[in-house]
Length: 201
Image (cartoon, rainbow, N blue to C red; front, side):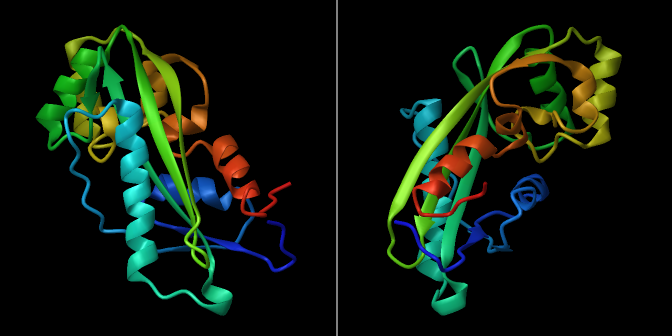
């Protein structure tokens, strides 16, 4: 439903990357950490995992925060996983696990899934969707793998790398949305916000 009242975004994430991406839209936004439980059933598909966690993050903020008047907006939750041969890779626990993930990804392609959930803080109306992108990583030798893992850049990222950082040097190509790999598919988000009457363009 269209509205003449400006709406803002409430980002249910402390991710610096998602914050930077949201900022590019030119819409006022606040950050409210979700503290949501991120455990999931092994029976879920990657598509289901990222949508479930994105929804859970947005709902956690919706239920734990009071919104009225100027504070009301669209809550945005998001979650990303990397999938290699059907195996879901989350964030590495340490440098050794990061190196192991990189060994398994180097020289081949994998799929990055990101789920997005939007909840209207006034009405509770919710939308959830996802995007997937194929990423190809170049062959790496052991020295390169250990050096990248030691950089620490991938320690808080699914798949143990950051395509927008030093990780750009180890990726040879992508098929799909680049911003999906960074952690927030902006084109999808803008379409979803449009259904709440928020027009970016």
